[in-house]
Length: 115
Image 1 (spheres, helix red, strand yellow):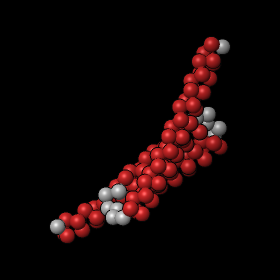
Image 2: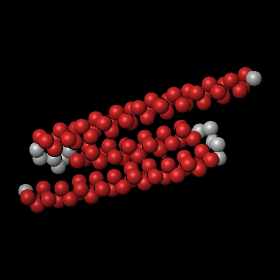
Image 3: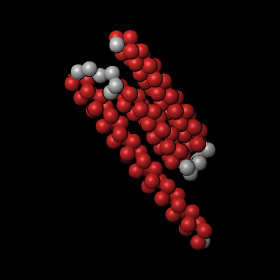
Image 4: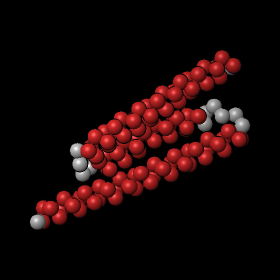
């Protein structure tokens, strides 16, 4: 049983590192693309950047959910739960911003077609 527990801990640890790494990579690449789009005056810069941030946070949230598999004490559970709530809240805010940004672009497109 100890061997199985050890193997599970290793799998979870490496998978968490992979998810964290992927989240950071997505955030960095989104930031670089957002900077390039900003200087090119792309009207979809904010929307694309928000989508990238949301995707990066999803990877990081997945890592925190995996962390719940290996927690042992109530203090760790509360800490992980707090992190999950904060990241989920950020993700919801970003998705709300994406919806608003898409609605603005859609309204601008409709207005341009009417003119």
